[in-house]
Image 1 (cartoon, rainbow, N blue to C red):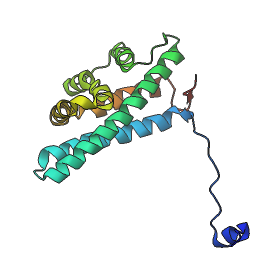
Image 2 (cartoon, rainbow, N blue to C red; image 1 turned 180 degrees about the horizontal axis):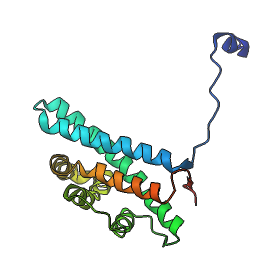
Image 3 (cartoon, rainbow, N blue to C red; image 1 turned 45 degrees about the vertical axis):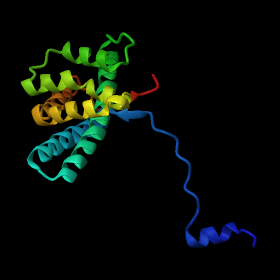
Length: 176
């Protein structure tokens, strides 16, 4: 049997067009994504602490792990963008560099925010060190139980800064 492309067209089965990855994004869109991640981390952490169902707790840990990774990446990208905009970027891309950059703004940080930021390096450990995943999971649970609300405070500080500096409508380019 010969394959006829007209059959695909009739059935609406034409192949999807190939899309190129997007490496440019408006700061406001990045902040929207960051807010979604922060709120999800906070809500699933609360759900974890109030539930006694092991399946629900496991799902919450999985969701927080994924969202912590997303939050951390957008945090890094925004810190680098902000440093570039103010002309103080030194070429660092590590999470430690970005955390140190955040500290230089002297935001009026809440205690939970300070704790959360101190534990943000946990993302690197979870992502890169599966040999010690049980230890990292215990640290993650501690974060979820003790300082998960700090993630929303970090988002709010960055959002407020970007708003005041009129950065919301600017575009970031990940390839620069």
